[in-house]
Image 1 (tube, rainbow over the protein chains, first blue to last red):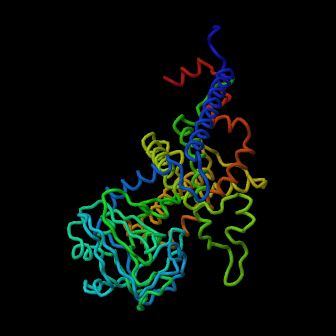
Image 2 (cartoon, each protein chain N blue to C red):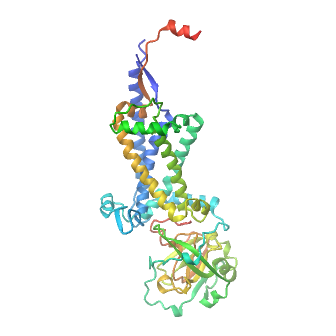
Length: 250
Length: 230
């Protein structure tokens, strides 16, 4: 029986086949890893395939998880911690004068941007929340914020702009800027805040007005907002340009 | 006389070997993320026996300042890691192989004997099936740990949308702590696993690649066999 292999020969054949498969798999895995990371440089935007994966995850989260009924956990006042000043990007323009600050509001319909001051904002219903502020680095601190809901703000000062896909917010000098998807922007816990831990905002924490958006990482909670604009396409985003997820949703 | 016996099904081997690079990438990218906030240590009060991780470790591994990349890799490859793990669990359930994998009541007693034997004590090994008692326990545990890693990971990833899940693991900070220590568990498993594979020898390793091993079978005595069959 010339074609019949002995068990030993059969095992050798299967072992050879197994190792060839393993080797081929290793080559595929190495090539996949190279493709995924191709062109990566520290501090720069991430490679295309990784960006696509983040966009895919964003679609999944928006279509299957996100809901205005899903609230970030809130805490009693006794849980409030001492939040650190972690980033001052976009807050280094020396000619910024908080007393002359106005908020520029560009509506989806176009036209001349509105100029608002803090009293205009305070005419809206006041909301307070004590939430766990989560930094993208991994730490979190329970913090109280008070201000007006961005949804109320939009309804009063930019009615119809809710139909936009996104909202963009920038510091007065445009050194820091975030883009928000509209469902997250209109979430009931998303506040334009002028108060933190029972006190008016300090300069380092974004006086006179900052964003509190507990369904996002801290990087989206822009300090010292100078302008708000509603738009259809994904806005420029400071940390997205530096490799982070645009959505950054919790 | 030697005959060929099947030790590991193709699907088991596939999941095992695919899981290896995926878990490696998950641990690597997890380290890139952990570096950005690295509070865990072994110690009590002011005394720290070991900080995860010392500066020399970060420098030696070159993982500093890559949080954005780490997150992107982690959240991309997590899909493949999860799918491969879920596929394995479904396969094990459907094929009935779980019967050879799950610990039995006697496994916990026997595992002690296996451990003593492996550490060099003169203890006889209990009779074994495909997996010995220690293997049943550790291989089942590693699959459960994989599930726990997925769930604690989701708790950290979407603590607002999945607040009930995050609450189940004791909150956001606890979930991150548990996620970290599960990973340390994989590293410990890996060290023991490799040591055991080395001492088990070539035929054992070969069976995880080829699926087969040789076994001695007794010469059959046809007359007796047929008499028994009556």
